Length: 363
Ligand SMILES: C[S@@+](CC[C@H](N)C(=O)[O-])C[C@H]1O[C@@H](n2cnc3c(N)ncnc32)[C@H](O)[C@@H]1O
Image 1 (tube, rainbow, N blue to C red):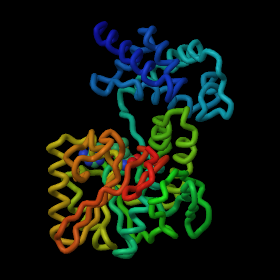
Image 2: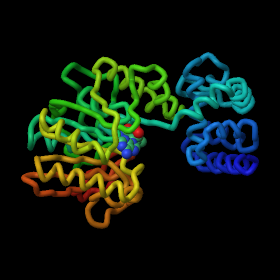
Image 3: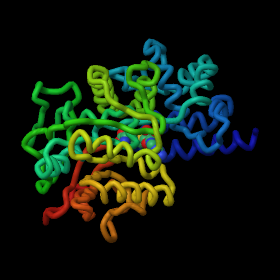
């Protein structure tokens, strides 16, 4: 147990170091947790040593704050306070963790971190515009869909910089997605027509369950208020437009789901930051499933993944910046497969750098 605890304290120390520039509040707190076995030990509530990650600990605490934003530690969190305090949060944080230890332990024991980043819709949109021009109304199948929020991509507003604004026909959406795009990016003049949409996930999030929706929010870092705000808006939109999200496995179920999707429009399989969770053998098996479907019917697969973390995927030969997010379009038309690497992107959709341009990339 004490060895486990030493390891955890070292984990928090490393996390504190790594997060110094990206998440100063969590970095500050992590460095203090690293010195405090009682607080660090809360992570031991998860029996699986591999799941004992700092992000889970911080999400469990954030979850408590979202349940009751009037608690003193909330005044340091940008997710719930417009002007967060900038004095030492540690004494208040420590007291809060120990006061709520039973509930925090329960969360750590039973949950894993879960995200759904709608900013990625700004990455998918230009490619979907191209596909819709070719094939007409789209039937989306988002595999590893989480809460399915990216299936509502035609219900969000887009602010591509410089240049184009895109809004749903009903008007400006409560979820507005800014995205810096290079001049080569083919931003469509209008949002594509989505004929049908379905999602598949091994542990889908039910947005109608307040505890599940809150957990999705708790996993967003408080120092990213723009992500937090658009997630809240997307959750609200999704409650008004119930989505067909199925519990299942990417490999075992993608073919059947794609065939179902094909009965309602041109089937487009989407993946964003999902296939890195599979093993190499599983990624190959996933590809085989898509090839099987593509041999039977015209199919499109659009993915935003990293060559470094998912090297078996068809990124094109020798992809540059392998650690970055690459957007790739794979089409099966009359049983023939083609692969087109489209862009390099920010992992959450803050920018997109479309290929085929002589201008210097944004990245
Ligand atoms: C990082 S989240 C990304 C969610 C969403 N695609 C997005 O871009 O916001 C990864 C999701 O993949 C799901 N997942 C991981 N392995 C899976 C599998 N073998 N089959 C189905 N879903 C899986 C997880 O449950 C999780 O919801």
